[in-house]
Length: 86
Image (cartoon, rainbow, N blue to C red; front, side, top):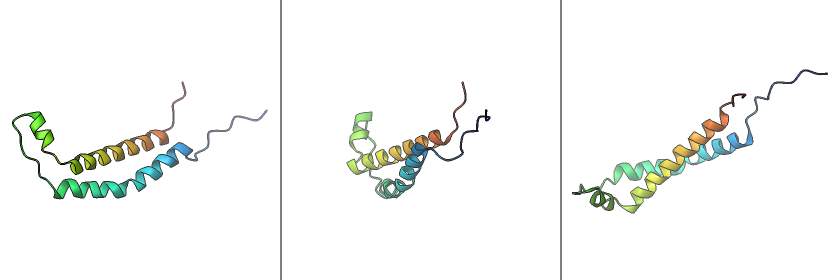
């Protein structure tokens, strides 16, 4: 009987998928950073809803793009991390 071989060090397909998506998603994220940094037109409101409605839609979308990019990086790091044996 042969001894059990250790798990391979090759990345899993899921890790490759999220790594590729995270790398490619950096291009829209760079544009989102430009939109958020150059077009600051937020007007302080008297309440939270007044402040939130003063933010233009393109800045909401830019923030969403950055959130998705953070999620992709998190998923990539989670897929790469070896799982502990229970």
